[in-house]
Length: 456
Image (cartoon, rainbow, N blue to C red; front, side, top):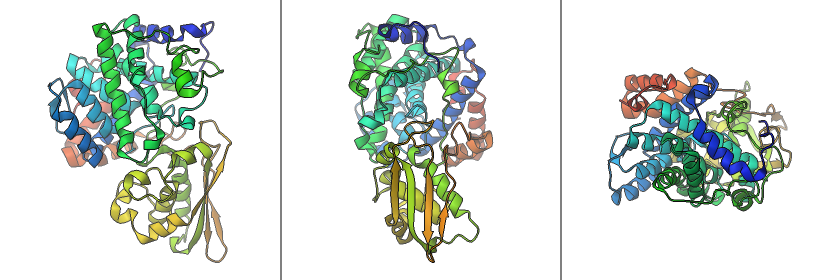
């Protein structure tokens, strides 16, 4: 992305707010809207599947017990509640499976969409207003990430909880058509609520951090609209936001907001093929390539080497996962499941497969080898790979995987996206209704009523 020519460091906060307030959906490239539609469809499918998870049920039960209101709906059943509650509960459900999309070190749609959907229902906005808010939130996220001196993961922060809260505030502010001054205040109010730690990865609190970011963004926009104020310089390169969360502002070019280099086009979403942490997806592709080797027999495996970057290895902290949430953050599980079952999906995360003695034996035989080298998708290494040592002294080495399946380098097709969506929603709505819903989302026009985004 290009630098913003001539922009003083102290004017960055104002630039974001001004650009967001001026965003015109008619000037947004078709490719950007296609990314937004694909992310929305994928996220809603994952949200439906995640709504039945224990973590999502706990948050819903507690959040709705003391919340009044009927502005917005919870999915999949359509129960009415306050918009803030809908943003939180749907936000947790969207992320709890770790099956939602990835971009810019985080999970943009799992934060932006629950906030936007709840607020759009509350104020009666149409799909075009929601799409404009999504694009504005995406661009804001990109600018904030570009100003950080170091990746937030490397210092222990959860980027979706930090960048996401502010991006969701801008998204909801654009949805509500706030002016630049109000958007600036909404950003500051969101910063007052931003947070989330990597230490919670592998627990229910990780998806709660994402849900809270969605709720915080919605609340920040509402408070700004009501007149609450906040600092207007927090996001400048010499401001507190980057200094506190990323150890200072970055020295490279500042990302542009919108034209000519839209982040949503140049840094589009990765749609997950596997319901585990994205840091492990390269390893899964590598291990699956070995599983497909003619004559491959997992019973001959004596030891396994997993080669990956240092920061992704730190994110994948669970070496001996005891439950499915921890397994999502385990390089050992990802590789062993791919080698044994030829799959890493929701069935492989169930207790009966996770505790299969054959799988546990393979997990115990995985050794990690990490590198400090970083490729073109920081903080990942230039490539990940897997080496399997078999009885008899034979060794099988996978290809080097620089970019996993579902990434912008290997994007999902409509057919792949539809299969994932149906797998996640068919049980709740039936096949015909799920297929109809996917078709409406995939081709969502900007002038559609919000009901077109909802299940029948």
